[in-house]
Amino acid sequence: MDNDDALSRRSFLRAGTVGAATAAAAGTAAAQEGTETATPTGTSNGTATGTATGNETATGTSTGGGGGGGGGTTHTVDMTDDLIFDPDSITVAVGDTIVWENVGSVGHSVTAYEEDIPDGAEFWASGGFDNEQAARDNYPDQGDVPGGESYEHTFETVGTHEYFCIPHEGVGMVGTVEVVEELEPTEAAGGGGPAVPDSAKTLGVGAAFAMVATLLIAFFFLKYGGDSPGHDAE
Image 1: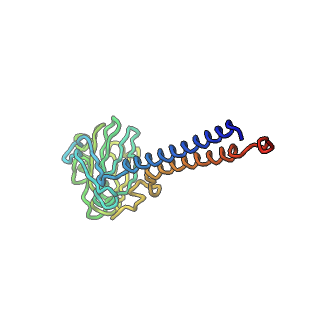
Image 2: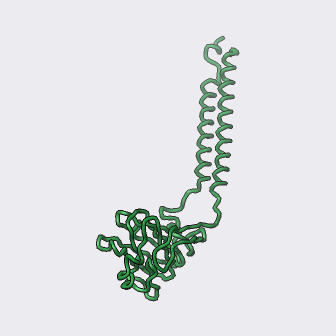
Image 3: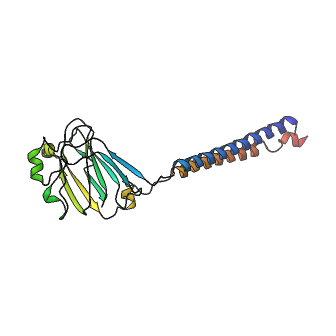
């Protein structure tokens, strides 16, 4: 084997080894970075902006327990110019708060159906009314939630709570809140099963790069590692 062949083989082996080491190091560093950025703080904050017209204010900050299953978590429902609640059905745990945010320009109300909330539950509505009829009679002077503002309510009674928007009830702007003792993990996380941590995803990418580099080393070694038939004959 002449010097050119030996140099070629050493060059390929050196390049492959450096590539594998670099890929492995990059994967490890990325995984460490992903682990650092994925570390939970243990606290989730939800802020309701604006103030709903009436006796009950929607301004404030609600701090959740971080897990979403034991109450104290803040959920958001949008009120849109398409005249819908989004989502129009939501499940929360006892002690959770829902913030209805008007993300459009058309005014809405958030008003419970007095006959369609659990027995013993306090009536709730934007404007802070004690009953459904008072909410209907005083809208829009009280209870209107203009664009850019919001209304919030904390649920303490298990069961199904039906509600509606006074000016758009006729076109189907209604919603449902299902209150349970404790959310299942998939419900608390928004469904779809347990989430894969970002650190695990990053580590997988780094491992894949290292594997590809190792395969390249093996390929170059097998192709250029031995002497050619011509040299054997000599």
